Length: 431
Image 1 (cartoon, one colour):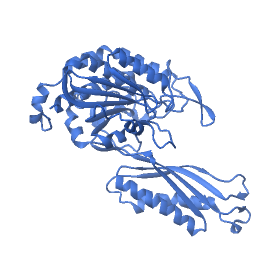
Image 2: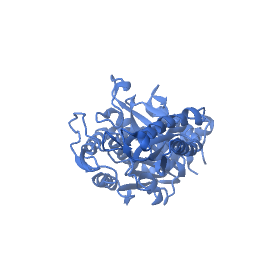
Image 3: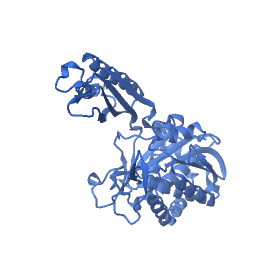
């Protein structure tokens, strides 16, 4: 029997649901452990595709719980399979494990002191996006669900993913590579859930919305070629710096004048520009890089075409040329929550969050490779507030900041949310 809203059709499933009170009791019983796991992972961060110690830490925990474990998926990915005591569907829960090349400035007693060579220079490494919290939360959910596995009406697959932050210019990494290697198969996943800690919400608040949640992200590189000349005689050459300036301004008309913005917003930004070696020499080339963010596949395709046309034709008007590369294959798709699944499980998130603490999250122009899982199976991605009570979230350091802090008190809400949504999904969708 598959159970879908409205409430009257859900009632038989709710009566037969997994033991929610026991799940909550088990979650609260391991709260201090979950905090300790996060602190350990935070103090020992590893960059994308280097998560060897973190993966070993996770795998050892899953094995202690009697969960079937597969390691080495898409590099250092870990997958655990927990088979319930009753037949039913398969639900997946996902957490990402990688850190960022950021030097920590939080002053916490468990702050990272790790330093590595990255991009030819020594940098600090920090869990500045909260992946340490995601991993610890899913480790907690695995322990909780293992404690009630005889009553689960199906199977739970725990996906600990490497390289969410990307490994450009590799054509595959993270979620995409895990999917390619069969993470959603054997047993076949019917639905997937993931979370992200978020500094713009108060600790313990859950943010949820159906449909588009986070933007697609495409790498943009434009190489403008002119003709070198002395800066005192610019008419003797073709100035790629001036042309590049015109292109940067022209790109802003793609959103404001060339794309229908009534459906979903979109952004194109240039983040770097490099050209020339001396103040009095106009160079041959300028290279600039940036990002394109959209929420709709059709808008994304239109952006690619119009950005390319705008750059090329502005360059041509000045006698220069522009080579445009948009790394759609190495970018992130938009994160889009399955509307039916989101609504079906809304009451679970509301119960976990508590009165007034389930909010409709805002659209984010950030990107997530959880989106690739959602292209394969119905998926829901939600947010967990981690800014401590008494602190204004608007003033809190954002994700990716060297001062980003996760309130440990929020972790238990994440464990309860992941555990309950998995158990309830199985109870409501078993045959």
